[in-house]
Each structure stands twice: as structure tokens, then as C-alpha cells.
Length: 506
Image 1 (tube, rainbow, N blue to C red):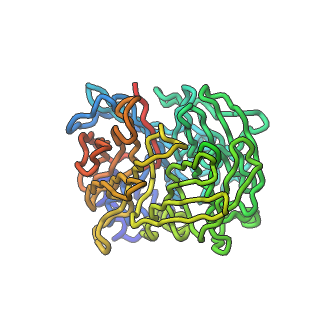
Image 2 (cartoon, rainbow, N blue to C red; image 1 turned 60 degrees about the vertical axis):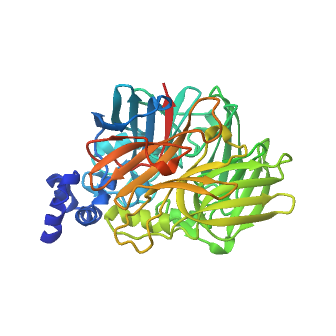
Image 3 (cartoon, helix red, strand yellow; image 1 turned 30 degrees about the vertical axis):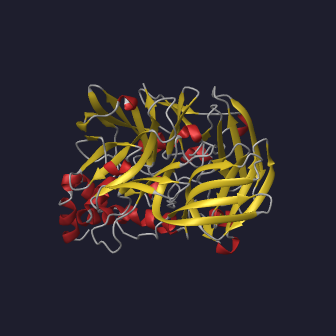
């Protein structure tokens, strides 16, 4: 590392960088690049990561958290980005950490615990990245033996059948004790489906039925799971999908499962040549973005529709006409896959490569005619959430994070600065922008009561205040987002920026 970069990296110490970090970074060019960039871009502290569990801390509270939010707010996300001075090459590679914020009349506390997956234990024992990951496939890493050998359980969480599951894209769900955060082992739904992917965005219908899917890319299979409210598997089916794509999320209606297959296609030959899972995909715009609609009663009944080429991570909610022949769906659309192929990769070495903003999009599918129409809004947004009681039913309130900083603002950060409520009927919005020195993470909706109307409740989530050098838990009145937070609780320091979370009442 050049002397100037070394001294610049030391200047980032107030955000948690130590001399040991800097010395380790001199060994690995990705770690060195990130350490040097952190001095220039303090917001990168959110992606520094952690090497150990985070002990219980008491937060400083401003305002009053409403009684409906007394309980635990959990977040999951990649948090161990470096091991033994070697830094991963993609944000999605980091080992998952579950962070728990406890909210009570006495105040708010925080702690974070890594999910002890098989990969986490093996890498920790080796003192280096022993297993391959989503975006890193160094020659000295062990070859992938099973999906769960590289499972990082780092994407989201679901509570179902009195169990908490930490979820990832390509392997089993991991059972976690929701109180102690202790890892309990992988969830096996059926012996012949042991280790099959169980993806990160299950949908739970109002009657408690959980639907999920998994993509086995090398086999070209899509698996659909139906789990009862009691946590017992009701049925599971797998179907062959031609030109299988990277699929992160899906939607359910009263009649169907709906998948948007981006123009980002898995090539098994690339994988055989030793490429990472990410690099085994190629951009195939000539295929467009395909819409796959499966019958919930028999997923072998498949319907295909067509959209222009594009990429998608997250869907909001879907609902259908009474006969099931027309489907309305919200999703967040990008024109290409730059965010996953470049932006979130280069971020890990401190290189800033912004992707074109993904835009909130409303989609209408007509199964009678086979026509798919979409309206792309002006809103640069992500992490769409609805009142979970409306899953698979007609909804009107959609909550997202958004980027509303003026274009060309040199001070703007990588990420989102705004919490937004979008009316799916009128297109009207309420939004609160924190400012260009605050990074906003996903906010989830919590109803005010069991009988509250749709959208009547609270939004809870986290933000990283760069100037204050701290993470804050924030709560909004979901009916009046523009008024700003009704309460905030500040952590003394920066928690690793994560992906998805949930709220559990006590």
C-alpha cells in the first residue's frame, strides 16, 4: 500500500478502522482498496463489516416508540466481508448477521449475532475464506460440494410456525432461536428435498399459508413450496424452466404464483470453467424479461408472458380479478443488471460505480390475451413492502425506500435517502427525505392493531447517519410519512448495513 493511502486509511479510524485492519489490507488488493477509499468516503463505514458478534448496547432514544412497536425488530444481512485480511468481491458474499433491536418501556437495546452456518464455522476455523461464495471464486477455495456448503444465511428472515428462519438464495433455510439468536441447524422440509434452495422472500397469506420457491440453476429447476400455518409442509413440486434466470423474489395471488425472469441467464458451462455463481450468468436481452405464471394447485400448469429486457430484485404485492385471469403487480425494475454485476461488486473494494436507478413499476397481466403491460413511474425506489395482511389481496398502500436527492448532487451518497408511501390507485406519494448524509435501509409496516385498516400503523427501520457516525432505529406514522420520524434510537457506532428484516411483537 502506498504511504499516502496508508495514512489516509488511518484517518478513517473514527469509523472503526484499526491499524490491524490497515496492515491486513496491505496483503489483499480488495481490502487495501476499500481501506483507502473509506478515508475519502466515510459512508463506506456501513460496508466495513464485523468480525465478531456485537454485544448488547443501550441506545439513546428521542421521541416515543408507540406501544404497537414494543417487541423486537430484526434485521439480516451480509456482515463478515473480510476474513484473515482477505476481502470478498461482492456485497452478497458476506456471512449473515442477525441484528435484534429490543423496544420496551425501559428503552431500546441492540445486539448482533452471526448465523453459525456450516460455511461460517469452516471459514472461521481456517482463518480465511475457505468456501466459494456468490461472487468470489478464488482458485484456492474449496469446490462447491452442496448448496449448503456455501450457505451464508444473509438475506432475510421469516417467523412461521413459531420458528424463525434465516434465509438465503441458494440453499436451505437456517433455523434460529428468535430470543437468543442461537443457530439451531438447517430446515429440511422433506428428505428427498434436503438441501434444495428455499429462497429469501416467502409470502405468507392471511390464513397463515406460506409459499416460497427455490431455483436450482445447474439443473434448470424451479421448486415451489407450500407450508401450512403450523409450519408443516403441505406440498412441494419442481418444474423445468428453460434458460433459467437469477430470480430473487416472486409474488402470489389467490390463484397463482408469479415470477419475473430477468434477462440475466445462468450458463452451466461458465460454472464448469470455474466462474463464480454470479459470473456464470450472462446478459441476454434478446430473451426479454419473461413472466412465468404458475397455477397454485399444480405448478406444472405454466403460462408465459413477455416484457422488454430488464432486471429485477424485488416485487411488492400481487392481486387478481375474481376469475384469476387478470393480475396486478408492483415491482422495482432496472433496464440492465449493472447493480448486481458491477455496482455491488466494486463497492467491496471501495470503487464507486453507480447503477442507473431502479424504478417503481406497476404491471398488468392479462392471461386471457397473453398481454403484459407496465407503467414505469418516476420514482427511484427499492425494498417495496405492504401491509402483510393484504398479501395476495388487493392493496393500495405500498411502502418503499427511495432516492430523491437532486440529480447532479455531488454530495449524494450511494443508496437511498427517503422513506416513501405510494398510493397504487392514485399514484400520489408521501415521502420524508433524511438528507444527503443519511443512508436509509428497508422499513417494514406494523399495523396499529389487528383490526386496523390497511396502512394504519407504523413503519420501522434503520438508517446510517454518516455525519453522526451512528446507526439509528426510526419509527414513522405510516399514515403521515411526510411528518418524519415519531421516534429515533441511536446506536453508539455503525452497525453493518443489511438487507431485510421483520418485526415481532411481545
